[in-house]
Image 1 (cartoon, rainbow, N blue to C red):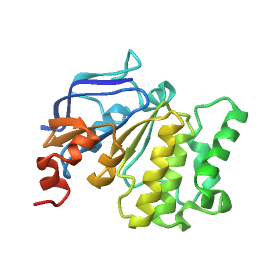
Image 2 (spheres, rainbow, N blue to C red):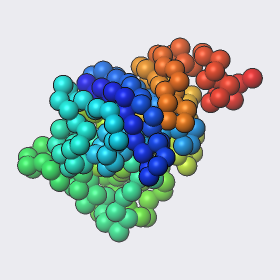
Image 3 (cartoon, rainbow, N blue to C red):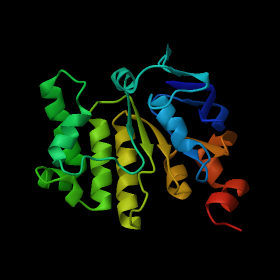
Length: 235
């Protein structure tokens, strides 16, 4: 579904992503692992059209994606729930969700997808008319994921969905990611909680200072000594 080829992304004179290659197959959960500054979020932002690559190619469903504006990327079927959530805090839950569907022209489908978000996250439905800024961090993360889902994406990119959340809320978010996959959504996940990410992932890629150092199935990476020492706190 997604193919990234020799992607290079720079901030000024500094290359944050240094010629990476990876693929995401339809129906998979794929995770990008790495420490802060490894290039994970930069990669997602480039796929989303928020950053322009210095070199390389991005292909989605057999069509070239790099160079398109962010709104065109959404129309192609890719949505991102960004790091830090980036909600409109003064606006209601419902209005935040409607903004996620801004490019759609099917009111009945938008209504059905909003009801689906409320099924996934009951608290959002119960408090749909309240401002997003009144919600806890976990509830805001639910809303950020729901907003991204409102464009009905084929590929959903999640950037640090468990950041700052309690262990119980993290479990809730991870269960939701698995449920979305079961609904047919393909997911590209950036997540500091390597244990949780790899437990979900069909495949993982490990980035270090802008390069992919190694990749494998999620199960195999969980048992890899390099991953265990660097990200799982194992001796």
